[in-house]
Image (spheres, rainbow, N blue to C red):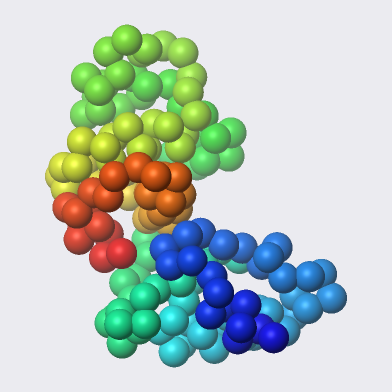
Length: 153
C-alpha cells in the first residue's frame, strides 16, 4: 500500500506526511526514511520530501544548510523588499510594503542567476529556497536550469 502510494507520487513535487492517514503516520515515516536511504525520495525538511526520477535514484543527495540568518521572515512568512540591498533593485515598485516570503524568493530565483542563490540560502536556508522553487515549478512556471544545477535538484 505504501510503496504504491510512493510510486504514484509526482516527481519533484513537495509532499508532507499529511498525504498518509493519521493511523498510518508512524509507518509512513519509517517507509519514507527507507525510501530516502534508497534514493527515491529526498527529505529536506521536517516532514517534507519530494520524489526523484528513478534514473536519478543513485545520484548523491546534497547536504542541506538550514541555519538561516533571517528567522523572523521565516516565522512570519513575510519580508519588506528593501531589507537586503543586493535584491533591492528587483523590487523597485514595492520597496516598503511587506510581501510574502515565497513571492520574494521566487522573484529573486526568476532571474536565473546562480550568484543570487548563496545569498538566498544564507538568509532563508536551503530548505526554504528548494521548497519555494519546487512548488513554483509544479505550478506551471518555467524551469530554471541554472538554479536547478546549483541547488542540485
